[in-house]
Structure formats: C-alpha cells, structure tokens
Image 1: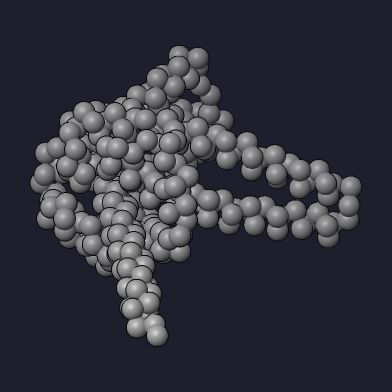
Image 2: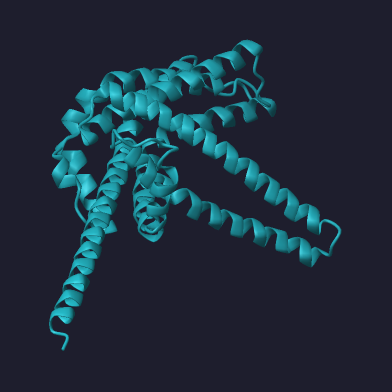
Length: 305
C-alpha cells in the first residue's frame, strides 16, 4: 500500500470505491500480517459465544462461567486490538510494535471518553425526566424529544473522534491529549463529510455482517426454540454434537468478520488522508492569498502619487 496514493482529496463515494480496491488488491498481505492474532481472537470470542449460549430457559450461569466470560471478554478485546494494529501498520507504514502500542493507548483513551460521555448524557437524561416528572403527559413526551436531540448531539460530538483517532495512529509526533482539541476542532469542520462517508460504509458493513453472522444466528435461534419446546413438554431435538457445531460455526464467523471489518479501517484511513490533503490545500490557499494581498499592497504603495 503506497502511502502517497492514500493521501488524496476524495469524495465520500470515491473513498468507498477506493477502499474496496485497496482491500481486494492487498488481501493477501492483510491475511499474512494478521492471521495469527485474528485466529487467536476468533478462538477466544467463539469460546465466549459458546459459554454464553443458553443451556436452559431462563438462562442461568455459574460463578465459574461468569469468571470465564470476564477473562475471555478482556482477552478478546486485547487480541482484536492486536489484530487491527497489524492491518493499521500496513497503512501507516509504522512498525508493528509502535502501532500496537498506539492502538492500545487509543483504546484506553476512547474508553475514558466513552465513560465521560455516558455520565454526562445519563445526568442530562435523568435531569430531563426529573424536571418533567410532575408535569402533564404532554410535557413528559417532550423529554423523549430532549433525548432525541441528545442522541443527535452525541453523534456530532463523536464523529470528529474518527479523524482524531486515525491521526493518532499515523503521526508519531502526535500526543492524544496534548493535541486533542486542535485535532478535534479540525475534524469538527468536516463533520458532514465524515458522517456521509461512515453512513455509506455502515450500510455496506451492515449488509455483509448480516450475511456473515446468519449461520450463527440461525443456530442460536434453533437452540432457543428447542428449549422453548422442552418447556412445553417436547423431547429434546438438538443433536449431541450441537455445542461443537455452534463453536466451530462461531469460530469461522468471527474469523471472516474480521476481514469484513478491515474494510471500515481502510475507509477511515482514506477519509483521514483526504481530510489531511484538504487541510493542506486550504492552508496553501490561505498562504497564497496573504502573499497576494501583501504584493498588492506593496504595488499600491509604489504607484501611489
């Protein structure tokens, strides 16, 4: 992946098309670079999925199962970060060690931002209902309008973080909190552009993930239907090898889904590169304008009678 070819001023539709070409042209390199962490992450996540598979209705879990869920959940997150850092290192041309470290720090910072947003939004929603709880039903319904506006505001607030995150994973000299507000302000100027690009990407990813996860969802629903039948007095109709079948299906599903999600990573990186190029052109135009104005002022002074 040639870095220069990724940093171009592109429209949202052009980014979607280019990301597909970049992924298909480099799918061999992507698999070679990331297959091991992806396999380990898929093993952990498929085991987690199997542990969470209901064994009865209503579902019950022992303390051992809950402990396994926590361990496997944390392990899956760590392994997925490792996996995506391998793909990112192909894009930013940084070392794998550097990209992994940056990816881990980015996740920790994003978790902190998420917690702050959760607290703020929770307080605002609770305040809205508290302020209107003693009012009429018509006023109570306005609380839902407030929540809707908060959701829209939250989307606007979160979108620039996509640009900021890609820049943090690309620039060695960038520090997350030191440069947070400058980069966030820059990303805020392109909120509409980011939204349109991610919206188009989300539709494609959503369709593909629905297809990829259809087998495991089918097995999950079949297992639930079997338990419902047993509660109504029917005999068990699931084969004895069903847990193994479910685990293998989950393993394949999670493995394939990673390479579907790499498309979104490429889209975000191309979007970041396009914003960088637009900002570079904007600054060049601003400098050229200033120089031209000074030249005009100097010329006016020379020709002044």
